[in-house]
Structure formats: structure tokens, C-alpha cells
Image 1 (cartoon, one colour):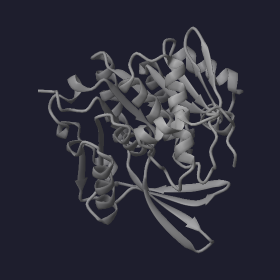
Image 2 (cartoon, helix red, strand yellow):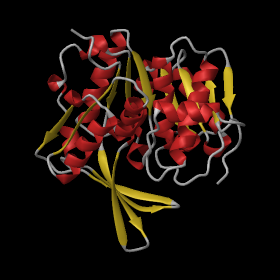
Image 3 (cartoon, rainbow, N blue to C red):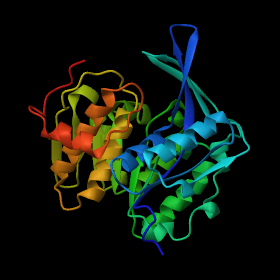
Image 4 (cartoon, rainbow, N blue to C red):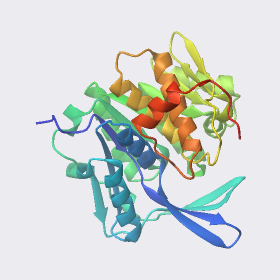
Length: 312
């Protein structure tokens, strides 16, 4: 039976950010791009599973607790006796960070532990971020992505560029994942990191060559976003918001995009794009990687003058 299994499965890493504040103080926060996307989907009312592994310690306990609070299907997460995966954020402006995660819990992912029938039930399967550059996890997820694509599932892919992706090995992974994807989300910053030798137009042309049929969502912060389909280009201005923190805005936008596709399958792409923009605006108005609710998004879309630039 697949009736009660999730429509959306997000594969990847969950981690704990340690953020340096006021020079000598550090603040911890549960996070990880893929986990953030999963929480957004669940909070927006989509049956969602986060398929990842976390540590059996206070850091992993917090991730498990917050996952349950967000409404994730907890059958897809495991805790193992390994060290936690940590992101040390030395500076947010400009961004400076490094990762601590040799032999950490995220690398212990085991596809055989997933609930039976998950593939049949899933409609969209999302991949991205550091999980696709950390072995042996990356190889396992590539195999799952290929199997999901062969089964006719829609693949969502957000590279979410980080420094470990700068090597030539990841370029092969990038092209393979792009070729499998129905939807690709990239920011302007991602494009500069992924294709340092190309200007933005050439970088997007390379993505299009790898993914001729994909819808490509390009986010540009306060400058809004674009959706590039094989036949058309749609633009969406950023919705007005008092910016508190931009952490997680990209995750909110792609999570909102996926949730809109699943909950409003008959809506036009322009409507899905606007929904995604509303999720990003709500996320940046809160501290940390905030996952908005469906009611909050509906209220934001119904508010006056919804298509304005950010007001930092």
C-alpha cells in the first residue's frame, strides 16, 4: 500500500550550523539545505519525507524533534552512532565557512532502510547540495535519482553551490543530475560558483544543453526570479519584505515551488512562480531558515501590492 506514503521525498544532508556572532559567541542551529527544503514542503501541507541520516546525540535529537514538529514522515530518517555533520559559519557577511564531517552520520545513509513502496508513491524526488559531493553518499543518491527518473518520477535538483563542489569531479555529477531533472533551481551566486569560467548567460546555456526539457528556476535575491522553460521565460519580482535574514530563502523558494506544483497541479507556471516568491519573502522576514505555512503564503499573496522589491 502506498496511499499514506509521501508525495515528495527529499534526499540529502541534515546538519547543525555553528554561527559565529559578536566575535566570540557561537550559536547552533539545525539546518542543511535538503532538510530545509523538506521542512518547507511539509509545512506547506505536502506529505513529505526527508531521507537522511543524523547522529544519535543532542544534535541529531534536535533534528529529529524539529522534523517531527514540521510534519515530516519520520519513517524516512534514521539516527546512527556516528559524529554529527557540522557547518562552521565563521562569517555571514562576507560568507566564510567550513564543514566538519569526516565519517559523520549523513554518510551512513542506507537506501534499504526506506519504507517499502516509497518510489511508487512519490511524485517528485528532490536532490542537491553537499550530499552530492560527499562520498559514499553521493554515489548512492545518484543511483536513486537514476532509478527514480527511469520510474517516471519528476526529479527536482538544487545544486546549492558550496566550496567542496569547485573540483572537476563535481562537474560530472552536475551534468548527470541536470540531465535527469524536470526542475532545476539555481541562484545567481550558484551560477558564479558552478561555472567560474562563464558569464551568466553562458552558464545557463550550459545547463540548458545538459537539461533540454527542464524548467530552470533562477533566483536573484532582491532582483526577483525567472523561470526558464524550453519555450518561454517568465519573470517574477521579489515580493516586499523587511529582510531579517536571507539564510534559507533559496530553500524556501524551491520548497514552495515544489509544494505549489503538488498542491495546485492545474495552476500555470506563472502562478507557481509567484507562490515561490511569496515563500522566499516570508522566509527572509524571519531569523534563520524559516519554513512558512500554507496559510501564511495565502495571506501574503492576498495582501496589497504583492509585487514590490525587497525593502531591506
